[in-house]
Length: 199
Image 1 (cartoon, rainbow, N blue to C red):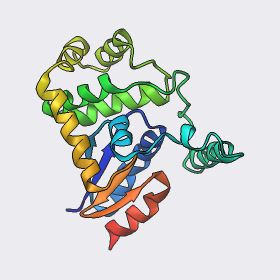
Image 2 (image 1 turned 90 degrees about the vertical axis):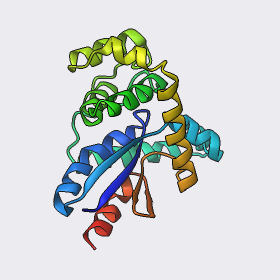
Image 3 (image 1 turned 60 degrees about the vertical axis):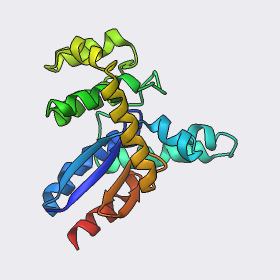
């Protein structure tokens, strides 16, 4: 079975949008999705990259066009629940460390299914510990325990290791996908991801 490695952070709206399409791609191609929690800020720092809202701020019309492209993508795929988080950018350090904890418990996919809607449908301020605990408890997790485990040195180290490994592999942003050694970046390359899986 082929695997899609998904370099992933809740901070990216495009990670949310990609996640909405990936399960169908996996179904059509018989592939499985391997979510790899990484810290987008750490990837940026290690590669000298910046968020598009920073990089392209001086470029006349560029951010307006990016918003238009996002609207087109949302409309094309009927992703009507998507909304930009009013607290954007949200620091996802708590969320991503807790993702490692959920992965250790064998519940990463459940955790992602709780975290992404909170960020990109419900507009929750997920860097607020109280909000985080409430959202995750409502989703069937022990939210307080997850929050406590974000201070575990082993969990902190695992997230750092994942992020460094992604950079070593060539990632410079999120969403990044790998099929074997083949890298694809951005939601706009999911058609190529599917073509590569179908080969």
